[in-house]
Length: 365
Picture (spheres, one colour):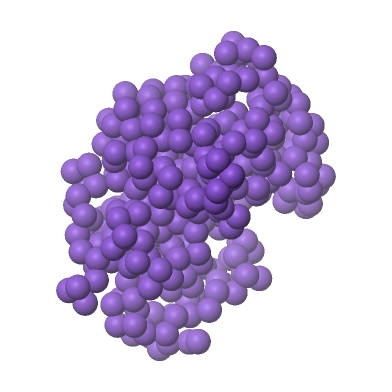
């Protein structure tokens, strides 16, 4: 085991990680109607504290940023208090935890919005498909395009959310600029048709993300800030004409801000540079000088390969961590893994959330 890079410690901007294994953020839909995390979240996160770093499920920084039913928030005193029980338990178990903060933008519906208002986005372009709301599945509707004067308010939502996250005991925050939510909607030219300073050129489309990250870093310290991106991703109807150039620029600018890490999701279809396919992780690694977390269907073996190749400093695991609270121990022992049950991913109760067995309780295949 001593030869495996996965199990070697790592200094993440002053935060000592005992290994290179990260639990990826995963929406679990266990919060209540007031967006307060479930008491079950204490056991869920604390039982996974052996990870080098835990990144929580995406957590809205404003009620207007909520898209799906039963996702948590970080704003009210009740929400902060509930998250504090989580961070206390994780820290007591020896773990480290960042809160992923988001605004879903057009990936919402008026039944989820304050006063029944339309969701907001960079442009009035509806996402394809349906969304799970308090009233069941609903067709996406065309959002309202944000006015330029409203954008400082979006930045402030993220700043306030980050400050409250630190108040709740988190070691830092991960700004969610991936997977088709508001910040990526500004990034991609398929969803951003603006003609103001936040649309058109790559620099303009990246402006809001960079303003959010810079403001959050100023508020809580750059060493406490990470950013997640998904170059070339198509989830939630996303598309950009040149994701390599767009995210290459963004990675360079984020590097200048000196944040703790960049978290990159490797797309299923490679991005291209001059017509040739390239790894998104490697492409951004060349442009971002800080720590890089790679995500995207990694196994123990492929994660070790990525670390040895220098493509990443840390590797994030999603579904394997969902079904295996003791994933680092299983990796270390090369033990069998529990199989995730997709039918329980978003059901709202304990089944499929806090009932997967550890090695000590007996392995299931």
